[in-house]
Structure formats: C-alpha cells, structure tokens
Image (cartoon, rainbow, N blue to C red; front, side, top):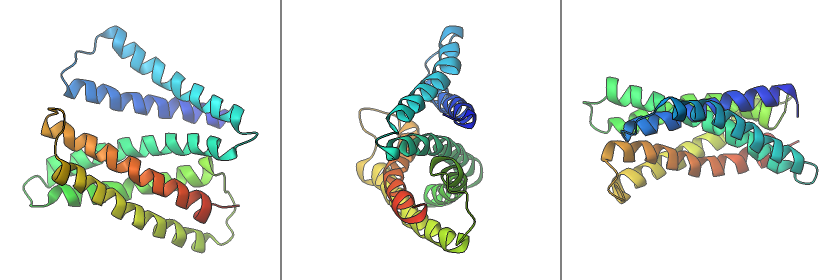
Length: 199
C-alpha cells in the first residue's frame, strides 16, 4: 500500500466515525469518554485494516481493492451528502413544499463532485488527461443516472415505505439518505469501473 492510501484510509475512517457519533447523539445515546475514544481511534484503524485486507487480495482481484477505495470515497461523500442535505433542508428550505427532494438533489450533486476526484485519482488511479472531455461526459451521464436512482430510492424509503421499526421520522429521513446512497453507489461503481475509468 502507498502512503497516500494509509493517510486517506485513516482520514476517511475518522469521517465515518463522525457520522456514527452523530447518529448516537440523535438517538440520545450518551457518548462518554471511552465511547468517544473508541469512535475516534477504532474507525480509522478499522478503515485502514479493511483497506489493507483488500490490498492483500488485490493480486488476484484488483476490483476488490478498487471497491474498498470506492467504498471509503463513497462513505465520505455520503457524510458530506447527509450534512449538506440537513443544512439545506432544515435551515434553508424547511418551509418550501417538496424541499426534501430539492435539498437531496443539491446535496447529491455536491457530494458527487467529491466522488469524481476520489474515484478518478485514488480508487481507479486514472491520472491521464487524454480524452478528459469524453471521460467527464461519461462520468456525468453515469452520475445523472445515479442521481435519478438516488432520488427515487430516497423517495421510496421516505414516502412509500415510511419509517420502520418505530424509528422516529427525523432519523428515518437520515437513514433513507444513506440507503439511497448505497443503492446509487452500486450503480456508480459498475458504471465508473467499466465505463468511465476503464483502462
């Protein structure tokens, strides 16, 4: 593994831990000093360990290592997606009808810009600048389809399915953002690997 892989895995693991801490506070679970240390230390180390395992497997299955990096980039983009969604929806658009869909679409586009950089230069390591316009057009096509998948999935979880297992509606909306991001991520990985960043 390269040094950049180690550094980014640790940073991304910390960001994922931040999201967990945020969920625990929303569920009114007291975060004491020990739990906070576990979140601050364990998640970066778990992230690094999982990437290291993927690196060991890479000799036979390159897509697993790319998938692990893709997952970390996607997890960080999901945190950005979620926090930006909350900011736009709760602070800016809370009074506008259909504001959650508008906020979700905007947060998805911004987080996708982060995904492009992370996937192009880190996950799939395509540093060349040849045919960059074609690559960007392909990326945005896959991303626009991913946006539709993400928003339709979000709408399904929030409106059609609704809160499950007695989960409060506010938390269910956050979980729906994550569920939608996972479904869109599957589409995006396949599209990015085999269509946009193929070598």
